Image 1 (spheres, rainbow over the protein chains, first blue to last red):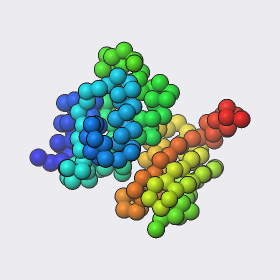
Image 2: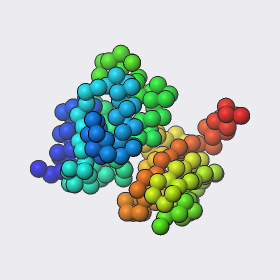
Image 3: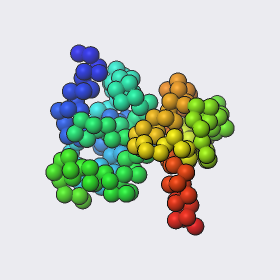
Length: 109
Length: 83
């Protein structure tokens, strides 16, 4: 399957998707770790994650998909939310909790 | 080795900035970018403007760039807040 199509299917099929280096249990980059921690702090303990270090095609393809050259990348309800800086800023301002509540029907943590 | 100064020049070369602060160790960089171009744009769009200014260097030379992208008004407000 075309990698762009694969990514589209992943972000459509799962409400929260994090493209990261490593896994939520063992992040292999401080920025991916930060994004994981923020999701946990928002009460999102289960989410679909893709370890780009094990998927070189996705590692390149995801940069084109969102026109975004860095990893991690967070998607909620099929939409690109941002990288680690944006995720952190949105958490600090409460916007991320609000977005997750709206899109997932969850109460803010 | 990529210097903070060369990253600054790269951003300024593609984006008119009112103010910029840049620090880094050659691989990881942190930037505060203040530009009128950010007015009316989302966080994602603001970062994309900075990435576009850096072009291929962002993919090849710069491992990580943490950014805060503020409009001049937001920057002044942030300064007032933090005294």
